[in-house]
Length: 205
Image (tube, rainbow, N blue to C red; front, top):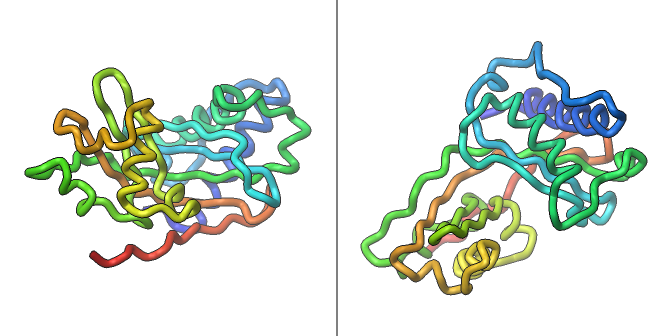
């Protein structure tokens, strides 16, 4: 778990990486950071327009394959320049964008006796989801169903569609379902103070 101070440092690193890259200074090498930034952790960087918080870019790495500092820099630059849903961010846009960082736990597979029971193992407000089938995969961060007011079943369906699969494909026994949790840190104003986003409490069964 990152402290509030470490979360703020993560967001500042992401913003600095984007602004430096867009200014032509290349990709920075993170250094002099607290201990958690050397740990291998999954991470996503999300960019949102201020003040409406419309999505402007989001890319990351769900698996803990590289140190957090390195993954954070890479994810930040990719979110700004390589999200296929959006044109690359222009340098002058950064003054109107919020930077959000999600630090992930290692994904764990949801295993149940029957595929239909998977919905009981998922909690909106706690879990992010990854669906994999064949060569297709889709991921949604835990803040997404909270923001959109989805139920657990809707969350499963939407993650399947993110993978390009039919919405009910989470009921297919051969579909691999993984869940993870995340700490989410976001700017309150572009370039301003950072706070940890507290997702809504889990609904009881």
